[in-house]
Length: 231
Image (cartoon, rainbow, N blue to C red; front, side):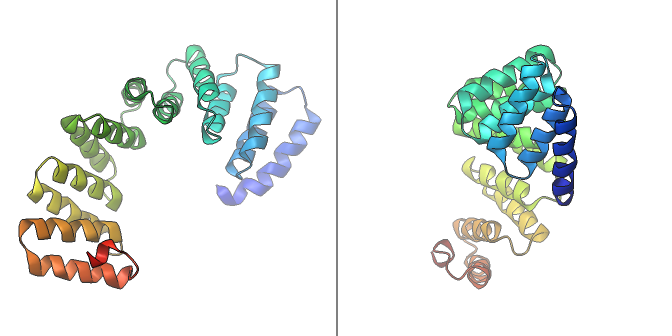
């Protein structure tokens, strides 16, 4: 829990001082530092853990994830691949590898890594969401729709998930399906301005102008400075 991080930092800092030769202590301390936002310091602790035990997959994974946050993608990818070489059934590492590869512009490799992540953990909705975005970027409309639908199936209460599926359906030419998903998004979060605007625009495209105007007014009331709401 985030509220426990300061207490964890104190305890883990003491553990590192008491056991400076413990790779596990440095790794746990690094993780707590990362959770507190001190990513650069976390990197140092993960590196210390790996100096002690170079074959420590958790430290390799944590270092890779931290380096990705620091936008050091080449080193991040190297460490994540090293973690996976030691522990192939490591869905979190596959997911982080996919994200790092995508950020580094290696989209095909990213999709492959993310597909491995969801094979290892079929309920990893964040990996499906990233796959959907990448498939959409690559022009794989059906693949993106399938992945967005999996996210909705795994996170049915998520307004954002329904909204993203609605956008994909709209882009695929299924206006009725898009409207239905935007309505579900707004029902789950009545203050979700992006969903309300998407619903308004879809209704306008459908020719349902009174309903579209009603939703534009809702968006303006919630976000009066939004240029899209005044479109």
